Length: 118
Ligand code: HEM
Image (cartoon, rainbow, N blue to C red; front, side, top):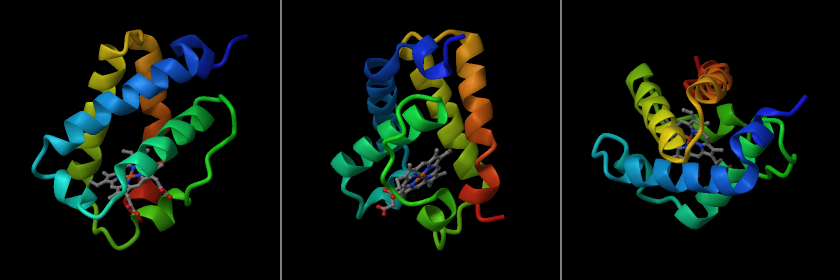
C-alpha cells in the first residue's frame, strides 16, 4: 500500500504545493503580517519537510512543534480556515486528486487544536 506522500507524487509535488501556498498567504492582507519577520526560505524548507512527514514521507522535519510555533500569535478559526483553503487550492493546482487533497486536509485539521493553542 502506498503512502499519501507517494500517491501525491512525493517531494516535487510538495515543493510545488508549498510554493503555491506561500504565494497565496503573502497575497492575503489578513495573513501576510504574521510572516513579516519570518525567513521565508527557511519557512519553505520547514513546510516541505513538515508536510512530507505528516503525509508519511521521510521524517526530516527539524522545526518546532505546532503548539510552540504558533503560541502567542492569538490565531483564531478564520486564520486556520484561510490557510486550509489555500492549502486545498494549492494541492489542486499541483495536480493532487480531490480524494488525496481531502485526506491531506484531514491530517492538517487534526493539528488545529495545537495550532490554535485551544
Ligand atoms: C493550517 C495549518 C498550519 C500548518 C500545518 C502550519 C505549519 C507551520 C510550520 C511547519 C511552521 C515552521 C515552524 C518552524 O520553523 O519551527 C510554521 C511557522 C509559522 N506559522 Fe504556521 N501552520 C499552520 C497555520 C498557521 C496559521 C493559521 C498562521 C497565521 C495566520 C500561521 C503562521 C505561522 C508563522 C508566522 C510561522 C513562522 C514563525 C516564525 O517565523 O518563527 N500558521 N507553521
